[in-house]
Picture (cartoon, rainbow over the protein chains, first blue to last red):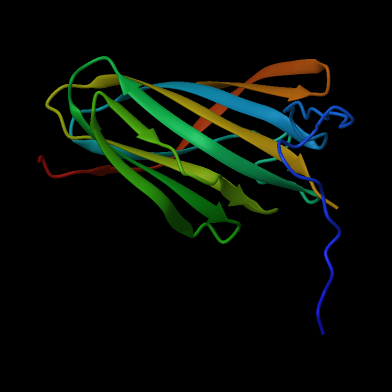
Length: 151
Length: 31
């Protein structure tokens, strides 16, 4: 059956009667910006795994029920030009660690997923950093993410 | 070792300091 289309005029479209709507980007109302910084001195030839104690809302070791944590990116920088390897993992309450991302770098390692790593309740991030150099290094870690209220 | 943590909830920012716990240390082979 033929479909009739309503003519919309010819020539250049006339937008004079159109009302513009502008959407301003803003954080979601249930998301809280979250970041942490850690300083540590990493021994030459060692790999350390660490967690941040009572990280969530200053009272929980793991993501609390009713929330999820979105890890945006992690950056490790050192005060010497040595080879480092970094891993971000997810640990659950059985203490099993699942690696989510690996990266190498001299003096700086960045783990930056295109989509945030998601941590559901009763899981937490674990950070692993290895120093392949011959000297101890001071490592600064910056972690950026968002805590999101769900449900 | 300490970590400094910040969270922004609505129009307020909360900062606190907490402990960093090293859960494992091991030797790596030099590259």
